Length: 210
Image: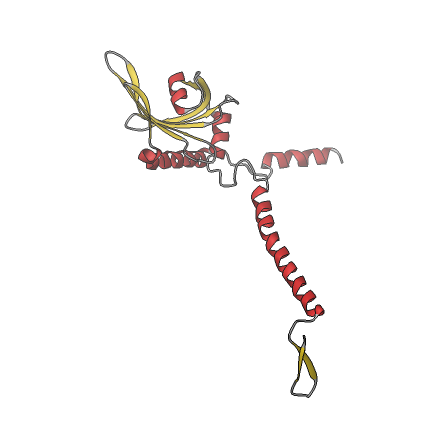
């Protein structure tokens, strides 16, 4: 049963149970709120499913990779090293850029040319020659053009073994920076302005056509 009372102006106002109109308005507002909340996870899901480029704009080794592929020497990585690095069990063909330091350590940037075994191998190895054999000592890292560390191995006379990535992370960071700086120092400079000789030739041709 509905009850009534009079407001300050003396007008009769209904109280008690809500009218049908009021109930309908409340229901519509509730439905709108639920619909709005439901759209939030859908929008977030759409963002997570949005396509992303294979490599981000911050792929720090992408330019060094291109440099090595275009100007590097044709070499290969021994099967046992390729296997422990996780890039196949056969000899891995690579394009290589390398530099020897004053203390005899060879710093190398090797890019796989095998489309089935993609990867970049960075290494800091020193060749040791004794009366019995020749072997290398140092560290090698598997990465990609994003510069993300994938695997770390130590190399010595007895062979190679996998190390925790954190154990040589600082050296990995340094060798990446070394090759980025090498590229910046040796990269070609391309200008779009014509040379004086080209301008003179063009002017001569223009005179001859008059």
